[in-house]
Amino acid sequence: MKPPVFDYERPPTLRAALEALSRHGGKAKLLAGGQSLIPQLNLRLISPARLIDVSRLAELQYIIEEYGHVRVGALTTHNTILRSPIVAANCPIMTEAYAHVANHSIRNHGTIGGNLCHNDPAFEMPLVVMLTGGTMIARSARSTRTIAAERFFKAPYATDLAADEMLTEIRIPRLAPGHGYAFLEISQRYGDRSLIAAGCLLTLRYGTCRDVRVGIRNAVHNVFRLGSAEAKLEGKTLSAALIDAAAEAAAAELTPAGDLHADEAYRRDLAATLTRRVLRIACARAGQPLDG
Amino acid sequence: MTGMDEVEINVTVNGRPFKRRVEPRLLLTDFVRHEIGLTGTHVGCENGVCGACTVLLDGLATRACCTLAVQADGRRIETVESLGRVNNLSPLQRAFWEMHGLQCGYCTPGMLMLMTELLRENPHPDRDTIRARLNDNICRCTGYEDIVNSVERAVELMHAEQRR
Image (cartoon, rainbow over all chains, first blue to last red; front, top):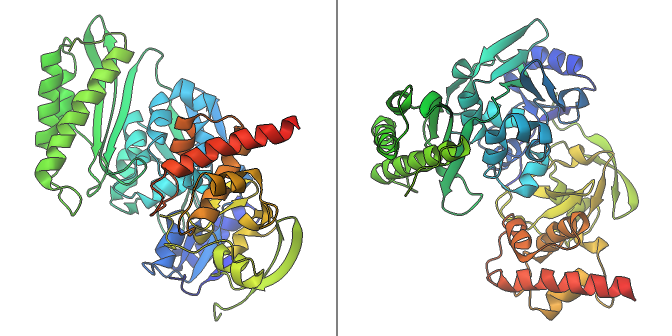
């Protein structure tokens, strides 16, 4: 199908874009990479009165390492981030997760800001931002505010942004050298929407698990961390049995989700399996591989 | 505002400059097919799944159905018509022809443009690299093996041509 009728403008600067957004607010949509927005238009799922094209705002395309953070401009494309040595060195879980984001052609244009604002429950980046303790910088013509990941992702396809606000930057705390990380995903075909995606971060100090963060995306609900799985590991001495217990806890805590592609029991099973795998990989990367 | 206000855009298609007035909602697929008259770019799913409409936008593989024509303003578009002609196929096209890299041919323009980008950035891709990139596009008849073989053959032909 073809998109419905809309007005179009391409403001030359961020300031002009924010002013346009404050004028048109809820009736306008920001066009970033367009890789989710334009299919939605083609399918007539949405019909905004106006598109404000921000895709060329070079002032929001950057990756900078500064004061213990990696700062990523919201309009930086997926492939730029996937190939960034700064991201690979400071936030390798993001690089690993990016291998699962759509496919190459879509990553050529899709942006991290568009991805996070769309908050599709199958998307990987909201989980990465949640696990790393990232913060979003939102700007409007009237103010700038910082939003923690836990507050930003409100519900599937919904964020904390007001109608006149635009996500301008994502700040990821630099992860300590030697930390363990892993991101895995199961989908029907490589590059398809995930059925279940799992990620984890942890550090090992003399065999004891610290700063354990485990999270799942189930393609149905909002992004979340799994507190019960984290609690099984935090402060404990690492063992294979402990990882199994955490995987069981993850499956039990998972919000029930079933759809055409995977019923609830299968999703729980995948959640346990992927949690076990990401924990094992992360422990090996943190310097302590487990046998078997 | 009626919403029907047209916007003037300037683009380069296969090396030739064009100036056109377009509705903002016009997709790049329909722009190259109906405004420029180049029907080699095929329209498949129209929601970003199949890749049949892949063109290069400033050198980057792009789903033309997920791109508005107004977004191409000031940019360089390359379509399958830029590769070769019936009596003078490009090495990549010749390889698809030799190795049966197509049956119905509907996905072929997209496959060719996707692989054009890959071969520019990596003139010696191994089989796994080719397969990984082909993940972008869907073919419903050849079963992909012949397409992978075609790209490998294209690499040989391109290098043979360079040596001559």
